[in-house]
Length: 277
Ligand code: PXL
Image (cartoon, rainbow, N blue to C red; front, side, top):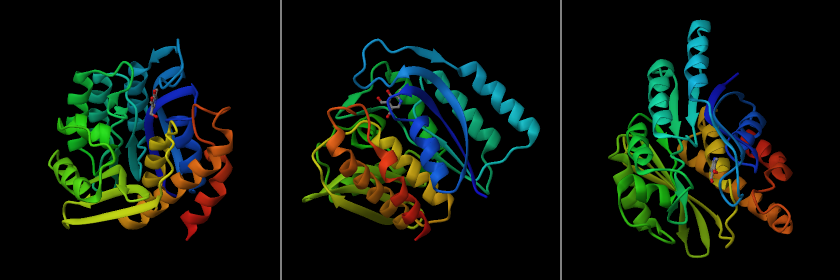
């Protein structure tokens, strides 16, 4: 059985990071170990007064225990990290648990719609850039790519612009950068660049003009699950883009009530089906 470890925060309420990664990767038939980086009462995207408890000391203790147990993972996937020092702790974790039989996925969670998420700093962005160099796959949206590359944010990035951004992202040092939020007419999707083969890949679904919090984490979880299962880059993009589109569509009737996240639970059956195709 395949085994992933995912390392990101628990936003106790709000449907993002670990509360989506765990059910989604598990639904794909993969054992999912977790290390929580921070515990927040809610995510930071629209709630007031959230609590924030840093678990940095626990991360090293957990990884030391795991090292003694001889645990190994087929992939290591990091998401939201609460501070620049946590990014450095991840770098050490990669040195300890990365092997030539597994791969590393970094979702450089930094921001959206051209802005950094609340509380994230330039120092964290600099550290995240270095962490990306250690990854096999990185999965930024256009906002995150613009901060990582220090280039202007492109609203509605098209395929040609995406290719140029993807090539620059590969220069950070990762083998396969993946960019989300790529537009093609009435369609929206994601693009990837395999820098070893010098090949681009794209997948699209119908664009729905509605931002739903946490969809980046869902995309990253599905993509990680798919490549862990041995799907190729095109297949992994296709499954991730299709499922995100399902999640947005199924959430539409509930947007007033569930404004803080998607109703991904309602279409997990489709994800399970795509995984088996
Ligand atoms: O969905 C990304 C994310 C993850 N974790 C926390 C966040 C956000 C986005 O706002 O606040 C705590």
